[in-house]
Image (cartoon, rainbow, N blue to C red; front, side, top):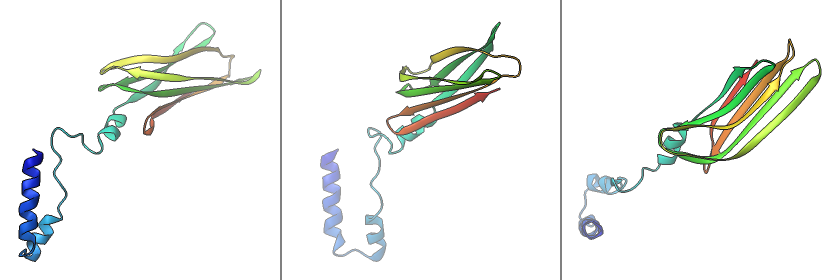
Length: 143
């Protein structure tokens, strides 16, 4: 394939001296992307398909919160789950984080916590997933 590309470039160079303005415009066209090369935005498109959620389940004394992640193509990176609880007793924070590695089509729990909530209490759970390109998914659940 390289040989063909070099031959084509040589032919273009030979014609460049006699080129009309239309030919000169054609020479400045971007090089084609071959199927064996990844698309320039493949990682960005991949990150857009990474999904995350915080699942809340009521318990006898409060709520259980689970940080979930899924990807149709697989993904890896870091996660951070921050839970802030507020009630008559004040407020407290729980912060969990670490690495994740998802296989294609996998949905998994990254971290979890159970918090007690008094009547009138509230919580805010904030989940951020990052990959090699930066933030890839972010979500929040509150009550």
